[in-house]
Image (tube, rainbow, N blue to C red; front, side, top):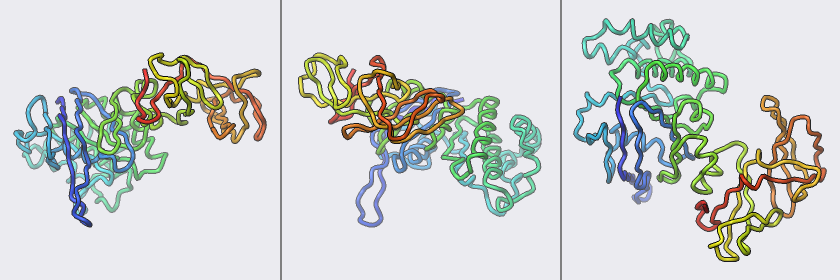
Length: 359
């Protein structure tokens, strides 16, 4: 297994329409320890796939470098990099049967005898009957089957690094869940340093040890899901991570406390000048409906989450809207006025102008 280090990498491309330069990566630094699975999350166009291709050596960075075990990628022969890649469409050769794609690496090295045992291992772990797919061409396979073959092909290599670029994005919800379970089993059975690009938080949480959040070519924060959820560095991370989204309330500092339109009086750093604009954030699970609370709210919607045994209640008042979680058996009527409170220990503050977290 290999430790991957990305040092101050930047990458831009030429816009073919007006010949301007479009920045895809801006001074990205990152370290993936040997055997870790890192998920990369971010909105479309934030540079996730470009970063993956720079790490793979498909794109050369404009500046900065990529190291495999402290050796610059530029100095490692292509045949020695040991990279397996799984793409959104599986990227199988159309006129090859699946078995040819899976065994290509080993056949190229005159190691055909290893193929049956490798396939047997993969099929046993996933329980998918992979051997039944091997005599079919990509056009005869479903999307999920193509991805299974693509993953088997990647695992048949002498791997140092396994890269995934939204491999399950085109599968429906049922097959996506099954594919995640199968892949988790495989990553546990064949531990290898892995980087997983996705737009799906559930997928990143299920498969990754740590998650990196990107925006506009920049790395915003890296950590476990719980670290990102509970201790975001800025407003972007705070609102990008978590479903339902964090509640935000605009306000200002007044004599060492934060005050907003509907909530206020919470202690804040005393070195902040009175009048400083500060946004307060709090997760819906840290708010509650009570007989006597800090503020009133008019009920806009009530959404039951039966598996989680709670209702998600959306309220509004004085131009602000927020969500509260309450027990499933709590009677709440649309249009009614209720009282609500929050846990001040779970409040987070952010500078309104920059979005940076205020400690």
